[in-house]
Image 1 (cartoon, rainbow, N blue to C red):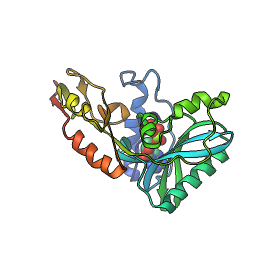
Image 2: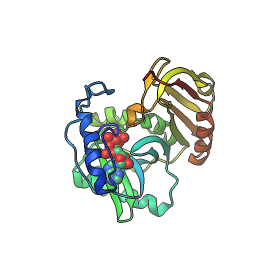
Image 3: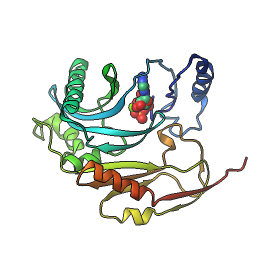
Length: 260
Ligand SMILES: Nc1ncnc2c1ncn2[C@@H]1O[C@H](COP(=O)(O)OP(=O)(O)OP(=O)(O)O)[C@@H](O)[C@H]1O
Ligand SMILES: [Mg+2]
């Protein structure tokens, strides 16, 4: 998938037919955002994996995998609606995640470069959801510059020609950060409130606005249905979370019902 488009959890056999119809209908929708670049093609069915989901941001140096951040998530359905990093975890859980991902990347044969691995700590143990040898989205690279003092983009461009030294251990945590989205309810956007004031706060890294007055908003079915991203930093993740919630509450997207 891309941006969680076409991901569905089917809980009962009776739901299968209608869900399949809905999902298959995404194949012929050139009108959907980014559909030209990421057309919906084939589907896979998987066992449902329970538990809490994290992503693991790593860099591999000639086969030696260094985990930079373990990132906690907020979800609505299967859509990620925010991230908090570093995840606030007991040491043994953190070790389990790191060991699992390092073992996975080794098994996959990744030698060099950025890794972005999503996994769940399920009742059957850690399970990989998906993994990529590319940068994570949602500005996690920028956030890690603040939280861990590590710019993985510099490593991505510098490491292949050995212009940067390899990291030999996990970088220490310098700060916490939380990013969340403010989403409009379905309708036509009339106005957006509070963005400039929030953006001016010293602990706000960025506020990114992905919609404008006049836009028609539908239900949030995928990452492209997320509207305003707020990125906040603080001395630790918990403080950043409280602060992000407060700031997100100051932003409003006013919509009116769309014409039928
Ligand atoms: N087998 C599964 N069991 C449980 N949850 C799943 C499973 N597959 C996917 N999910 C949930 O759906 C989300 C989106 O799935 P996935 O990451 O595969 O799609 P994606 O299009 O790459 O999304 P994104 O771009 O947001 O990462 C996952 O992050 C996870 O929460
Ligand atoms: Mg994913």
